[in-house]
Each structure stands twice: as structure tokens, then as C-alpha cells.
Length: 231
Image (cartoon, rainbow, N blue to C red):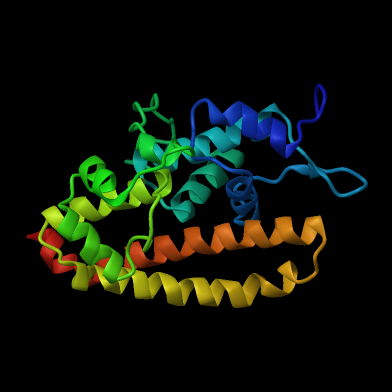
């Protein structure tokens, strides 16, 4: 390893400029999936080098710019590692990244404080819709509303404009509650240990479970809606 080894925090700092949604948990997840294999110090800490960082860039760009699943990315990396040419039709050279869509500024606001009328106006909802969404557990039941609530309200507004009623959207609330309960069962033992490392492991595992659950739901929906999407 040339130069000083990089910590996982150093790697995160290098990647954040291009991938604003990357997290330490995401890097750990990609390691667990076999996409990267940083060395370990004698005490067990990850030690990254420049090659590891570039490999991560390859993976993250392939996910973002070409929408490739990890299985395909892993196959591409295996062929590169073995010195084999790319599979015909599969471009292993990662194109220049497309401009990332700007995140909803609402999600970045931590000091927002809105009453129900202000929330409705900022999200593009009718106040009556806000009341109905609150009633179905899709928005918090009391003001003030923060940036996270505003971001959620904007997503709900988009779904409302596409014809979904609050009673339909409640299914998402119920599914989220069930998934949260399951994740809580899985990470609860770590949280109850009350030491900082266990709590970090619990947070990392919970984030990975959320990410995998979201991917699974998208794949299952794609399968069920295959006929519709092909028309």
C-alpha cells in the first residue's frame, strides 16, 4: 500500500463531493457484498488505498449512471481483475457522471418550523389534504413541522396529483411500520448492549436493511408490473 492508509472516514470525505448520498454504512455494505476488500490493521481497522477509492467510484458510478445491479457490477470487476476484455455490449468504462439531480432542499433544513397552513402551501397541498394525510398517519399529527416533514409532504403531494387518495397511501405507512418493527427486532439486541460500538453497528445494520428492503420492493413491483411496463 503506497502512501498513508486511508480510514473509512477519509474515503467518505473523498467520495462525498461526487456522491452526496454515500455513507459509511453504504461503504461497509459494498464491502460485505464483495465489491471492495480493504486491508485490515493488526487491530482490525479498515485501511484503504487510492485503488480502493477508485474501485468504489466505479461501483457508485455504475449504480448511479448505468443503473446496474451489484451482481453485474461484480462480474465487470471480476473480468477487469482477471485482465479479461469486457463482455460484448457491456461498457466497463464508466462514462463521465451525469449531473446528479438536486436533492430536495427541504430535506436539508433542520431549522424549519411550519404550522399546518404553511406546510400545505410549501408542499403544494390543500389544507384539507394535510388533515387527511395526518389522519391516516402519513404526516405528524402536530405542528411545528420540520424539513423532514416538508420533504415527506412534497412526495405525498406528487402522489396525490397522480390520483392516489390518503386511504390508498396508508398502505405505505402500514408497510413501513411492519418493516420498522422487523428491523427493530434484528438490531434491538445490539442497541441494548449500550456501548458506542454496538450502537454504531446497530445503525449500520439498520441502514443496510432499509436499503436492501427498498431494492427488494422495487424488484417485486417491477415483476408484478412487468406487463404494464412493456405496453
